[in-house]
Amino acid sequence: MDIIAETPRFIIRFFEPHEQDTYLGLYEDERVMQYLPKWTRDDHIRIFNESLARPLPGDITGRWGIFNKADGDFIGMCLLRPFDDGSDNIELGYAIRHNYWGKGITGEMAQTLLDTMLAIQPDAKFVAVTEFGNIPSQRVLEKVGMKRSGNYVRKGIELALFIR
Image (tube, rainbow, N blue to C red; front, top):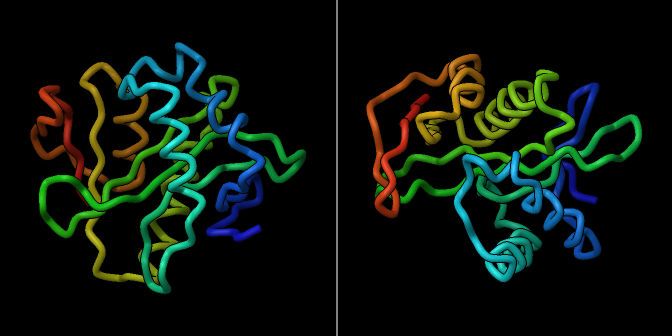
């Protein structure tokens, strides 16, 4: 088990191949999917399989699982990936199971992940996008020091852009 970061409440780590159904279950909840791209099950399987690859040393991008330290329960997933605007920016993304909403986990995860990756790559610049109606996610991004910086259009959808 390759741990990326941990807090007293959870660990962020690479997924294991046998966790595919756990990962896919996250995207079967309509509440979780409300503000996420509408990909097919095959898309999610492909993305999960891609997330199993371990990056080269110094690479701060990837897609990881968030697991409760107390009982090993799957909380959700988080990612850092190259932003699709052609810049050197790294995009923060996440999806959290509904039963973990409102408990401060998303903010704690985002802060922990960004701090961990800045220790590896101190000059990294982070961005995030949300749908306009996703106010809770926007508040999380602001709490971790990201600032609203206009809008960004991805695949024809205008999104709120945050930078740090």
